[in-house]
Amino acid sequence: MMTDPGKTTGNTNEQGMRPLSETGGLLPAMFEELSETPPAQAADRDLNLVLDLPVQVMVELGRCRISIAELLSFRRGSVVELNVKAGDPLDLVVNGCLIAQGEVVIVSNQYGIRLTDIVSPSERLRRTSR
Image (tube, rainbow, N blue to C red; front, top):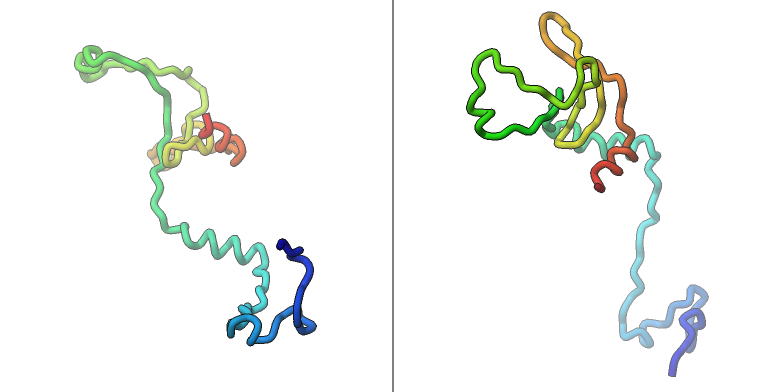
């Protein structure tokens, strides 16, 4: 015999609960009321968990494929031709994922990268799903 789960049968009180004698001595579970954390606080708290994690940041100037023989022939002053042209943007890669593109700058006699384009999260996801 099948019963409709929406209908109660037998002796129930106004909350739809049966007396202890009919439920085998089991008590219904009682839960505290959940309160919502404001979204800004929740995001800050979640982000704080990962702020100290180290990541590998790499600026990729370009790429090329060469044979081992070519690699072994390198000497001081050798030139490696890359797949980019002068003035093309550099790729900023974090943990193997393209995050941004930029251009070379020199600050206090050190090289750096000025970010000119940030890759959107949806674009990053699209690139990793290939």
